[in-house]
Length: 271
Image 1 (cartoon, rainbow, N blue to C red):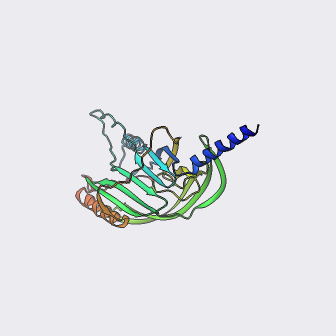
Image 2 (image 1 turned 180 degrees about the horizontal axis):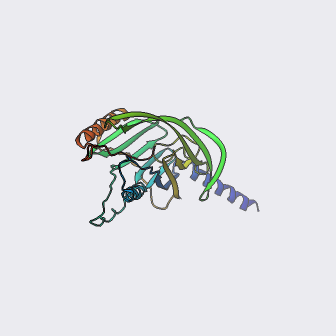
Image 3 (image 1 turned 30 degrees about the vertical axis):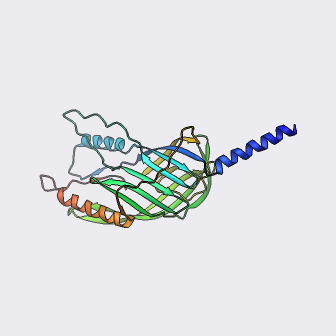
């Protein structure tokens, strides 16, 4: 009996070392859904077109992502999928170009590298991680086999809309982000730029975007390599956002939103 107990103790120690040690690695698959609240100007009477646009946008925003991680590092990237078939000659197709992103986070060193391509140019955004002030809520729910705990973060953000005068207007909005994390996977990480909780984040909802983990593989047999991106023009996050703003203004000037009748067509997605 004593020999059996000793063997069990050693086995538990090995399992504990495997989970909390440096060699602990995993892979999580997330699926995204985005709220599509399509608003078009009152002059547009084509309800069928609005319905088609809304459906295509909904499908475009349904994506799948993979997060590979160990105790301190992670790599997050959108999974490639086959392009949708071309529509019939009488229809139309909407394609949303999000660019290619590869986000590397290092929790221990409090930094990240994000390789992203916009307008055909590759940038490597390098900066410090932003730590949110999470409010831990005494609520639980199960996601798959994992018991998850609720956390909330409230902030405000600015967005730009097009006015009736065909001008850009900056609007500030309030936002409440609700996430669910599991201490059963003891890594302070998650998808996108989310992190800072005592467990892996399995679900995110910010009122418009929802990310839900659909599959987790811990310590898979095949080796997991977490490599930091190293290609692209190196810029800070502030520098990258400035470049994005300038490019968006160029696009607005190049493609005016006036219709043939001189009136403006407004399309609004989400908040």
